[in-house]
Image (cartoon, rainbow over all chains, first blue to last red; front, side):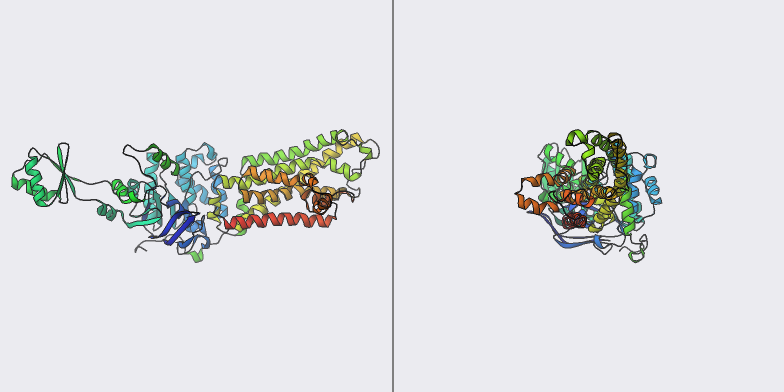
Amino acid sequence: MIRVEHLTKRYGENLALDDLSFEAEPGMVTGFLGPNGAGKSTTLRILTGIDRPTSGRATVTGRTYAHLTSPLRQVGALLDAHAVQLSRTAEDHLTWLALAGGLDRRRVSVVLEQVGLSEVADRRIRGFSLGMKQRLGVAAALLGDPEVVLLDEPVNGLDADGIHWVRSLFRRLAGEGRTVFLSSHLMSEIELTADSAVVIGQGRLIRQSTVVDLRNAMTSQQVRMRSPDLTDLVSGLERLGASVRLEHDSVVSEGVDASAIGEMAFHRGIVLYELSPIRPSLEEAFIALTKDFSSHRSGPLGDPCSRDDREDEA
Amino acid sequence: MSTGVRVPGPSAATLPRPTYADLVRSEWFKLRSLPLIRRLVLTALLLAVIGSAGFALTAERTTGTSFDLMSVEDQVSVSLLGTDLASITLSIVAALFISSEFSTSMIHLTLRATPRRVRVLSAKLLVLLSSTAVVSVIATLLSYAVGRAILATRIPAGFTLALEEPGTVRTILGTMVMPPFYAVVAAGVATIVRRSGFAFAAVFVMMSLGAISNILPGDLRARVAPMLPSSALHNVSGVSVPAEQGYASGMSGVVVLLTWMAMTSALAAWDFHRRDA
């Protein structure tokens, strides 16, 4: 269980978190979403005791991180896969961590096996790809067989196989009753992995709900139609109370569902070539939800600077 | 909590708490598993030998005094000059050991395993103090053996560098204090500045305070000199003479060195505890 209560963090003049509160339950994968600069990493840093809050409280398994009995057994975290000394071998890296956490050193080979790095255990981390470092970070997070797992942008740098593996891993960990909390700036990632989502922007909570509810709340009833009888169709739609707009050779209505439109067309003898509900992707829903909270936004063709910023944070 | 879900692991009350010994073992493992640190320790030993040989072979020319006219303490000092080079190298080891964790952000992982920061720092300092002390004993004995062997060839009659000579053992033991002292100070400074370069610079300035203090007016210099690490190290090893700037008893030298170590460590602990990592 993760509980964040009225968390505020100031870095000088900059307000990174502003009275943020939410919870993440055991047995579920909770996605932590927000645009870049929303305060996700700051929240994770406070949850893991690296930064201290200006006010408020963040607890894992009922205690602040500094007061955990056996931190690595209670919370496993991957915040930055690059935060390693490159000249050490993967095995040595996990060994010092196991020693510090008072863990059985045999756990090192167990987690290396689990993340698929056994073959390269004695190789220096310097030669690892980003995906391998990410796997090593996951291994470090799982070393203490923890109740709560926190991961910051965990699929970054992983190849298709790695992404599939890590998603199955999260599902399995949650299935075992653990609290899995993962941040991402990609709604599509959360859609595929998480049961519930905490959405933040500019350090504030925008919404906390299940992923299904989030999508439903964000999608409106839009339907696209193509027909040779456009005038009749538009007049029929307006009688149903839909707002209508023309897009190239099709009509897009909003406010009436597709079945009602189908019946109306049938009764008025209107020929339809296409009648398709438009379901905005969760990504679009997320962009709509957070557009007022982004610290920077792309221009119409995509602003290269924004893309660089995203990669920097990733 | 969701119903019907197994929460893994034992409850917090029954979890074994990691001990301080676990932390010290972890820091020791960290230190010895870095190839650069291993290479620097070997370099320190090599420099102790090469340095002593080099100084012993050239001391008469560089000081303008023949060995025959030097005091026993001075002869021992010359034979031990390689330890100074080992000490500089071990200070680099200490600063690097600390600062590289900050520069790579690996310190975050360390603090996730052990959130109590002062405990982490004390384990790091303990490991550095004890490991540099062991290396220092070896480096100083190597240095002495090489220096003595060379001096024996330069002073044919009445060679007096034997351990039985009064003051020799004290000089050797006092010299052994220098590397761990500077290593602990370097580690403290590195914890505060979090960058290797700044930490090396600060320690080199500290090593040079004796020379720098010469710009002070005479009476102020006389008061400050005994409190400088270089003077304190000379006082501990008994190589300073009453006429020398900074001369004091061996015990006062010990107190000065302990105060420097305690002050830098306390300042580092306060800063580490206070700041976000």
